[in-house]
Structures are given as structure tokens and as C-alpha cells.
Image (cartoon, rainbow, N blue to C red):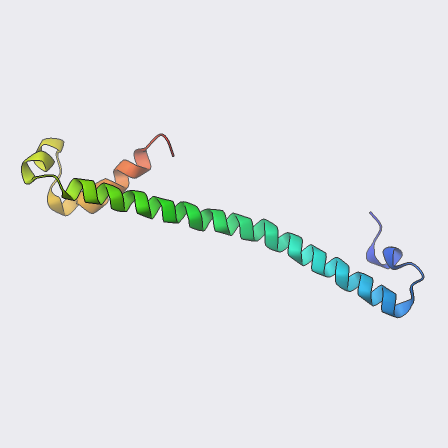
Length: 92
């Protein structure tokens, strides 16, 4: 690909400056799309994970102490156990 000065050709200093500015803007926009999409994906994944853990905590909290004892956890262990169950989910 031609460098910025070759692309500007004989347009003079104003055309050259405009071409460099447009090129830089396009490059910055492409970087934003690449990095922004990646960051948005990470944020969305973390949000979904937090919702899933919250739902699991809710389900475990609704269990009786006897039911929790059967599965081998105490009420105090619900947050950690809920996170562990979600992390072990093969569908993620």
C-alpha cells in the first residue's frame, strides 16, 4: 500500500494535510472498533457471569438447611459454591 505522502500526490500542502488527517482518523476508528468490540465482549461476558452466579445463589438460598447438607454445603458457602458451579458449567 502506498504511504501517506504518495497518496496525497500533487494536491499541495492542504490536500496533503487533509489526506493525512483522514488516514489517521480512519486508522484511529479501526483501532477503536477492534479494541472497543473486544472490551465490550469482555464486559458483556462478565455481566452474564454475574447474573448466572446471582441466579444460582438465589436457587441455593431457597434450599432448606437439610437439602444443603445433602449436597454438602452450608449456607455460608453458598456464594463460593454458586460461583464454582457456574464456572464448571460445560455450556459456557
